[in-house]
Picture (cartoon, rainbow, N blue to C red):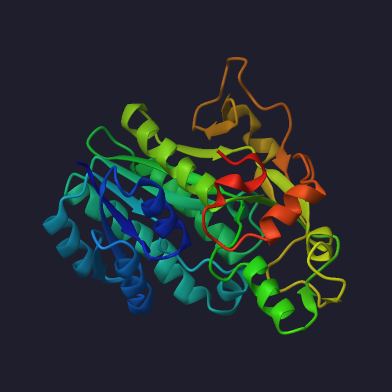
Length: 315
């Protein structure tokens, strides 16, 4: 059974991946969040949890040398846009220096495959979080070699992830308070936690066979945030954009189109241009993607965070 070490393994992405593939791999969760690590262990007893930060290279080296993982999934990061604007130094330490530590440890201990987690905010970045994730994608591309292979998954917004808007709105609604909406014009690309886990698994398997580093994403639906709020409540208060936010997000930019390779719903970005036919014809963004209908929005707002394979045709 292959051993998978997940940095930030007790967070939304790591725990969803563990839940979906619990019987297929031996899991190790590396995180500095003691409370979430304890919670993960109670839910999945066979998972080994290690307290540590990706900023601490010595701790990482000790962990990786002991475990000798077949795969590292690098999910640890500061992920909130406004945090990156307020505390850029800490974001650099966690998201960039932490990534460099992962790369160097993967090299040193001959880890066959390392998969990083990125975001649509890395496409045409507008904030420090997006710039950092774009740099991570480029670092993983450059780091790829025969001995240690690297890839990245570029996500949209993962519904019901820790700190995301739907759990926040649910709490406000339960307290009979207005749902706080930054801007009624805002649109976001969204997909479920199960889809995120499946994308990581697809990237992991693909990394074994690809000669070069790549960024893997997939087609997903877009939702207008005002419409999403309205299916939950009539009591909505518009509060304005937070630092670093923009109205729309782009998953694949116009400049990236020549480097895309499309296979069904999956979109792969490589460093070399695609001279074949399986290529995007326009940018893929919250303005061009298919829009969720009311039934699909109701499905995700009524969701409690578990068993999300029934999301709008998620698979």
